[in-house]
Structure formats: structure tokens, C-alpha cells
Image 1 (tube, rainbow, N blue to C red):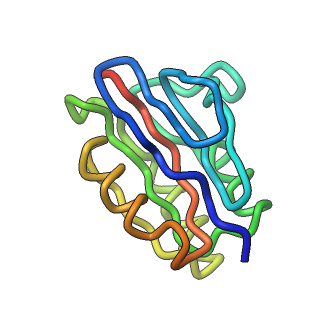
Image 2: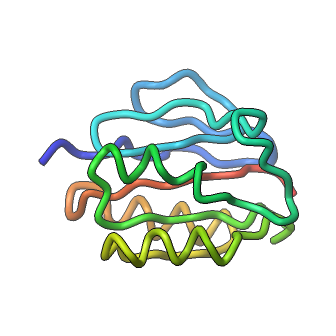
Image 3: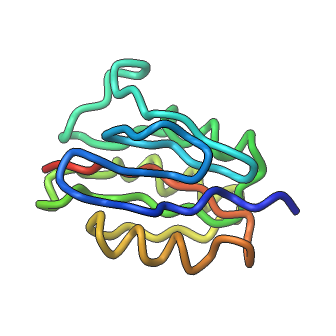
Length: 121
């Protein structure tokens, strides 16, 4: 199993991830990651994380997914997104960003973990 990259720093509007340039929001998965561009699927705080946002994580073999709600818990997750992950027998965590990073980093190297991380509101 190829490990997912660890998140080494989190502050308002900035994240640092092993092997990637610093950024604001990230999509991480076993073997890598990239900056998460909300415009790809029209993601907004409400209705929130869409099924299309997590499809790449499924395609990359994630069996556990951590979804962040933002630092102020403003980012929602569509029920259809959770349903899609559950249909694929993926364990899902939905937490504020600080807690989400702790959970994710704790799973790195132990599970095929992926995640979507939002470092502001």
C-alpha cells in the first residue's frame, strides 16, 4: 500500500503537505494529492462537498475518507456524498478542519486514507 502524504502544517488559509507545494485547500489520497479547486465541480459552502468532489478519492483506492468542514464549520457535505462513499464501503469522517487533519494524519500509513481539506471558514 502506498501511503498518503502527511499534513505537516495547518493555519488559516494555509496548509503544508509532504511532497506538495503549500496551498489553501487540498485533495489527498494514497501516493499523492493536489490543491482542491472548488471551481471544478462548482463546490460552495452550501450545499457543500459533492459526490463529484470525492469520486477522485474513490478512483485512487481510498477505503477511508476524511472530509473537513472548514475552520469555522461552514463547509457542508451533501447527503448524496456520504451515500456514495457508504455504497463503496468507505469509512467516512466529517469533522472541523483541525480535527480532520488529526484523524487523517493518524490514519496515514495504516489505511488507504484520502481526504478533502478546507483551511478557511
